[in-house]
Image (tube, rainbow, N blue to C red; front, side, top):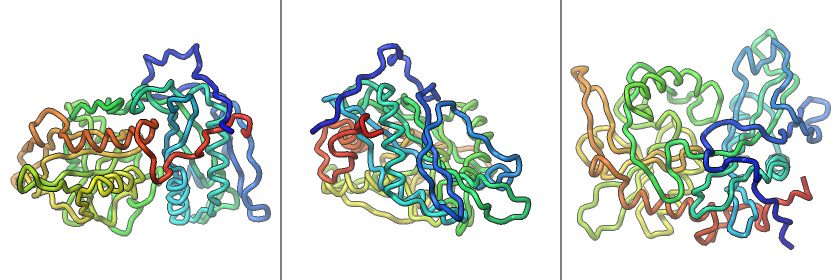
Length: 373
């Protein structure tokens, strides 16, 4: 039996939904201690958390997080996109920062609870997710206080949500292409570092470079590998993917994804590779020299991630060997390419229920149930 439908709030101005934080009914949290493990869920109405000034989260950056989305379907039900993948990745991040493992069932319970109690903040249905989504942010922090550089005796896992518009305007089958620039002054992650996990400390140092780039007219920044500065790692906000230049107009498309020790294992990128294979495309997971972009070997480039979904890239600005700024155009230099639009159509179509979901990526199958919150 399908859950009772909870309609979108009639008092929210959905037409003005932006990429921002909005007031919600609250969030859910769990506390871990050595003697008890993970405790029971606690519902918190105010958007704050109480921490000791000496907590390892504050003093030593003990924080990891995830990002996933819930979408309203045409029948009014709400479903969450691939939460099991995020549960797995959270534990990879937690293990790297000496945090306790969180059972998948606890992760799913938390995500279901916070969405179920905020069902009225899931945007109205629109084809291909054109009205937005409910963004879900699971977070684990080392809440306990320690002066020494050691793991504390207390951790907190919490999940909050916010209704969400598009980060770069990619929604509802529309995907305006944007200009990007390579960050030359800062390396986001080193081999054998924390680039492969979603740690809060990976993002803070990038803020000033993103702000400077945006001021100069570049909405998104790109990072090369820190060891050789010759191969592509990822964008500051999302993963890098590309369509390889075809040998002939009727050649099978090839989706290319960077292979690197320093990039985040993206749920969206994994989904797009699966979609590409289902379409009969070739998929190459390999190092991508930036010279391949300069030489015109990639006919379409896109940024992909939970927040951005898919954002086509129309140009990449970089410094040449003489320190001079150069710009390479992608595709026609203006619009999203046809293969990028196909991937966007398939991804957002599955999320919003317009396309068949053969791999059961949407959870739960019957929809989020407010009665089980």
